[in-house]
Length: 334
Image (cartoon, rainbow, N blue to C red; front, top):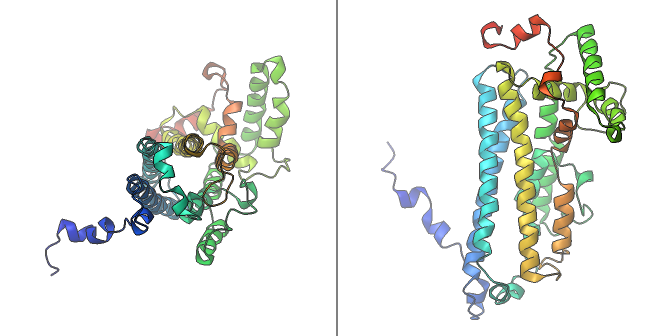
């Protein structure tokens, strides 16, 4: 039998509480706020570790050969996605604490940190890759791993070469055909006509976008296939049916992840501008301008968000065949 567990030992507090070693103390140039700076960034890295733990478990479930959409497995996926969203909200709010440090407080120790930089957070870059951010879609891709150690670059490359959450969501959506064969084609023809009639004159060019996203003849390079896009839009349109509630929460949770990541990047960008203005970052990046470019470009689930452009009013939705309505109800799930 193992011995009694003690709070201090279980949490390895000797390691954690002695892991703050301010450069200003080493150089005997006191800078009170460097302790705050270290603690906040260590907390960020711990939360990144937890986000990896959650993301890995979600990927493991979605990668299984069969996933029952009316089972605890899908509930677990949705629950852990929502946990990721809550953690990301905490990351955004940590900036409130950081901003209690003034620019002059930061200058007390800033030059002592060179060339260390948040740009060297390999955990965050690896997390983006696991979620589905492709190398070719990165802002500043020519140097985004330039300051990392070789073993850290390898971890990121491994994540980029593996199945991302976005790719697995595409596969999950592709196997959810709600309408079969001719019924599927007839439904989407009716829906396209309803969508066409809902457009203002200035929006008529959206019809070509509809075809490029939802029709099999599309050759546009996208992560989500036309079949997956049709399934995702169907879930959004008819999410009131019991069987579609969890799938909708899953899709909505992914959009929440993007929203929180975007909020974190913009808050970070504004904080950097407040602290150092237009100066170059300690790691040599362009500071605010790099953060702005990443915030504008790094939307991992933008293809899902784009589908909201093709929604129509509930009262104009095409009626579903009775057998499909029965399949989407709890009492008739086979």
